[in-house]
Length: 397
Ligand SMILES: [Zn+2]
Image (cartoon, rainbow, N blue to C red; front, side, top):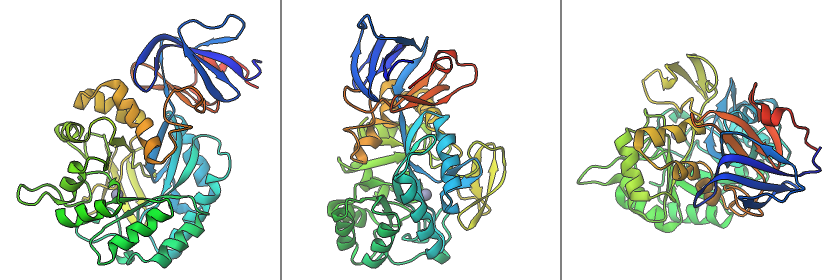
């Protein structure tokens, strides 16, 4: 027993700006209280061993895992996803919808809202992400266009109420007449607007960003791409200094050179790793459902029967690994892209997203092969890999 006060010692501690070798992080009352090289003598030290102590990761765009989908509109599915994400170092996520009929969508938001207000067994639900309904057909990806709807204030209000005000992100295609007012309305509710599944021209996307949209959904995928005579939505997001680019770093959705191009243009602060994982994540290849569509997973890559990519089976620890190995992005920056950058995007950086004094004691313990050994939320382990001794043998209060 340690009365909620202890040090975590790790070979490398990743803070926002630097990596501290043989660092000690003091946890007290579920918060990070100190980060130092020499511990105070009378406090218990938990030696995590030759591992990296990194901030708990935040997956802000995820549809499902292990056979469960946000669209199931079931608390048991939310719990399965929560536990599955904890195995990969994720401490918080946004329950992300996909295009389906209107009532099913509201039912899903209702459960995401409820899950956001209770303690979950693994990763916590930080709110809802609407990725559905308000798109256009050209870059529909794995969204069934027969359910597409015009985005109106009434529909926004209905979604907002269904999830008890926990709507954090709204993805939309901005090529409709009153998009400026709609974007401003969403912002007035505190909802971030992301451009996605859109055929918006460069000009339309630029205007949407000027009106208050703040980034691009899985950049390059599901949007008008860059042509040298028409920079498209991708060009608008990449060239707008404050816009955030969501990145799926599975090596399939984006060529490594394109990952480097995004990094060159967005820098480390406006590039966020998302998994976009679907219910096949954590399961073997085969046939699955994403919303209303059949999805076929082969070698871990999910596609519709027409061949469109349909989300991924990715995890954020693997995304970090891929950014480092494929795109040669520095490890500390890649880790921040899975933690601090999403925390800032969701206005949660005062409590989550980095190993900093007075933030919540949320960590992932990751080895040099990017394998997660343990995940800690508010000072309590929510996942410990079988055979990883330092945390399994300790009792927490
Ligand atoms: Zn999508």
